[in-house]
Image 1 (cartoon, rainbow over the protein chains, first blue to last red):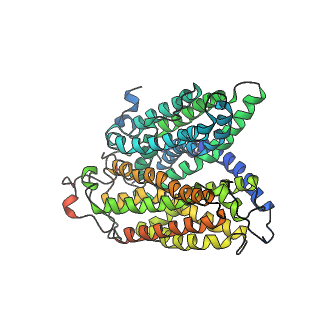
Image 2: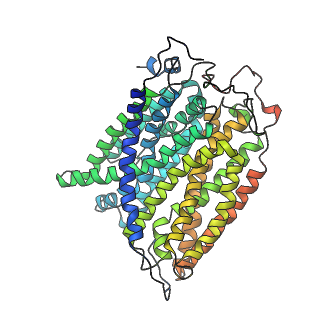
Image 3: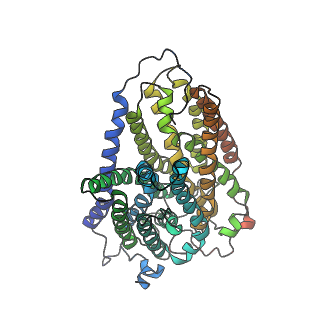
Length: 57
Length: 445
């Protein structure tokens, strides 16, 4: 039950607090998504023969 | 300063919003999750140390930095989990910040240990605190925190890359300068978490939540302390479940970039493969939040069943997507992304699963002990993957044919995990703590 004279956390404090963690995350997410999109810029064509190969790990 | 770190000083005043606590947890997890972006330093470090270290051991020696860091993370969680219960989250997070920040400085000074022993306290302290703030939604709480750990690499990777480029451009030694800068930045970021963290006051409950709702036989209203918990079969069943889930996920994560290049040889090159790794990190992070939150509604046991059964099917199907079969990059990426979301989901759901079974009283310490499953999987997973790949390479066999074997072994491991999960039952009454006046929520521990 809420008490009349209880000091509640302000919405501004909530917003600022979340912004401190959300903004760096969004920066990292943007960077990662931009890189991830490169994956779909190469559309594969059917492969005919798969040669035995070493290395490439 | 010492008193500020005490548990008593971090008790939230009346009216304090519990939604101020997740950012504190995220600050810690986003910082220590940087450990997963270590690979951005690998090539620069190899080039940096090449004149000083034998070329034959260079890759292995640099690789040890990551292995030692991960091993210490798991060990510190197991060793200090019980201490954390007494000391409180703020003190543990402060020490974690000091160790993490100074670890970078030590690394900058040329010492191989990238992070130090107490760092992992940062992992479990916000998790247990959030569980107390969100007794009505423990899955959401743990998902929020552990999501940050998955997202840490998303920030750490571009930050490390761009700082190195910046210092290189100024003609300064890029790696030491980058380590010092990151050490300071992460220390400050973690201090934000230290200042913001609060534990709920004694007897606190969310408004409108009675705390008596119990619609699942596995959710206990009793508490089990850590020394009793590790004597229960439930602890070892969950250990096996987590181990199987993590080992299988690492089967993809550990080899993601070369795997997609081998699956679609000649069509997916290194740059695009890097994009695939990035995409996996997004799903790893999102899965932590999605699956842990979902578990609040469908239950932890069902959620783990989805991981194991759906995961086994997807692991079985994954080899069929490769270039000489279905030849579908989108299908391969979709299946791998779902698998990795469940890998992350397994991490994020396990604290809530523990809380359901053992109560909230000692959940940090129990979680710390259980994370040895992660350390073990971190060794076993790469051993399986690299052992089979090395065998194929050494015998001049087609490397593409190694992947079905690897992925089907992981499929089998998930079936083992499903059986372990199936056997999980409520903890026997003989293990309950006697003092049932203890609340599973609030500042009780």
